[in-house]
Length: 113
Image 1 (cartoon, rainbow, N blue to C red):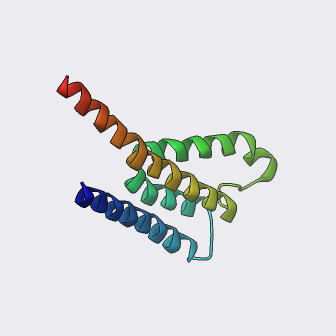
Image 2 (cartoon, rainbow, N blue to C red):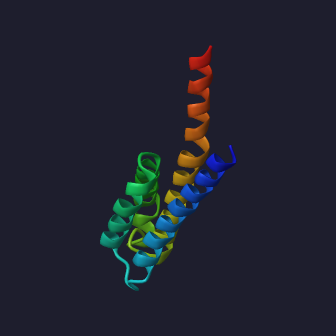
């Protein structure tokens, strides 16, 4: 069991490093636009699919409906990009390391009974 826990910790660390690497690549460019937010969404969707993809587009839709008319190009701002990255990293971590292991445990319990 200790070996399995060690492997899980390594996978978690590797996943978080990939997310931070994507963030570093994106935020190191120094310029932001709606196109850059789309690039960030695509890169983060690869590691957080499917829930990260859904959360990103929900955030973009809410910002487009409520903030875009009043404040202009919110989706192209640094604050939006950071919020998007944090949201996708958080829900992706929750999906892969909280929800999925519990679903697997439930499936195994059902299979045993």
